[in-house]
Structure formats: structure tokens, C-alpha cells
Image: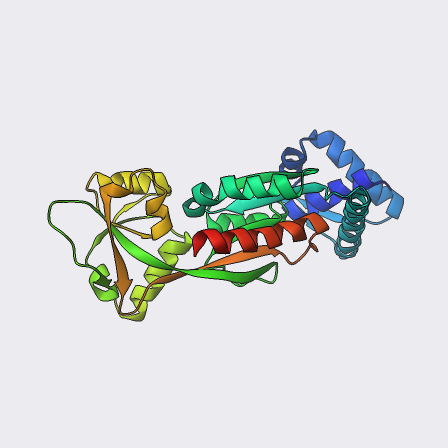
Length: 297
């Protein structure tokens, strides 16, 4: 067996499909299938159970998956250790950021990453928390900042900070009250993302706890579009203050803290529990903890 066969097998097993794995690896599907089959022939075991919906791992495949991940991780660690001999961290880090934080964090994080780890490469993807949590499980992301992480045996999430949420209105001549109660929020027409967006679910759960339901004016899955619609008078939004202050037109809005009780969103730093972090990824985790806490608090 060789490392390419192990890498291909791991990616197929994690994504549950030769088609998805070929796209992720940028390898033709016949070549991918042939390499995985050669691995099975050499081991004299069927590692994958093929069906019309994709593939699942056999009992032998589950055992081989654990070993293959360990081997690939050790190879990556060896490369990094050799890099450290010449005084540098190497390797690639795939980072996921939510849209409300991407504008504030992308530039400073990238700047610090290049300064501290010039021999490593960084890939940043913007996405919704639920999508990024799935991407961590499937190996598309190494690290992600996730709002209100759903407990999962496949993801390790550590709380980074909590953010107050605000009701965001279009600025008009008449001044709004300094704050709004959670119960009063139920009467406001909301421009809000669709389920299973973490912010949407938080608003629904917290209102349900006091016997209320949100009044949905529009469902929009895009931060910029939500703010544009609020500015156009389509309704109000529930967002962290940073999303408004980095919007490019913060003066177009009025923000009110939501109180009685306070509505707060939990931001967590998440990694896959299936794959141990490489040295470069560990360094990136520390960089994120330091930079995010400094920039967001």
C-alpha cells in the first residue's frame, strides 16, 4: 500500500461517496476507484460496502480507517517536524468563519498567520455554522468558529466568547427605545435566516421558552441581503453588534439590546474529534484564541 491509496480511502470513507471524494481530491473517479480497490486486494478485505446511495465502511473498513488516519497524521507530523528543524511550521490549515465575523477577522488572522507561519498555507471558507460543523466531520475544514454549536461526538467545541444580540432597525426620524424585551421582540417583523441557521434556532428556542413565537417577515440566508432589506424597510433583524458595525453603512441602522432576558449567542472554536490536530493547526488554534478574543471583546 502507499500513502496515496490511504488518503483516497480515507476521503471516500469520510464523504461516503466516490463521486464526492473525486471532486474533493480533484482526481478522476475511475482512478480513485482503482486505487481503493488495489488497497482492498492487497489487504484481502472489502473495506467499503458499495450501494446505490454511495458507500459505507465494513467492519474491516472501520478498523482500517482508524489506522489510516493515524498513519496520515503521523506523516503530516513528520513533515512538520522536519519543517521545525529549519525553524518553520508547514502544512495547510482549512478554516471556516461565519459571515458575521468574516469581514472583521479574515484580514488580521491572515496577516498574523503569514507572519508566524510563512511556510504554511491557509484556506478560509465563509459558511453557516451548521454547514461548517458538517464540514469538520467530513474533513473539509480543520478548524471553524461556530455559533451555538450542536453537541456531537464528531466535533470538539470549546467556548470562545458570548455575544449580546441586538434588534436592528432602519434608522428613521423617530428615535427608538434604548432596549427591547424578549417578549416585545415577538411582535417585530423579522428578516431572518431559514432553519437550521444557528441564530434562527436560538431566537425560536428562547421565544418558545417564554411561550412566544417569532413573527417572520422574510427568510433570507445572507447577512448582506438581510441588512439591505432592513435598510429598505422590509423588517428588523436580530444580529450581533459586530455584524452591523462592519457592514459598511452602520449609520443606516439603529440597534437595541434585547433584554429580560438577555439574548446571547455562544461562539465556539471547533475541531474534528476524529483527527488529532497537527502542530500547524495547534498553532493556528492559539492564534485564533488570541486574535479573536482581542478583536471581538
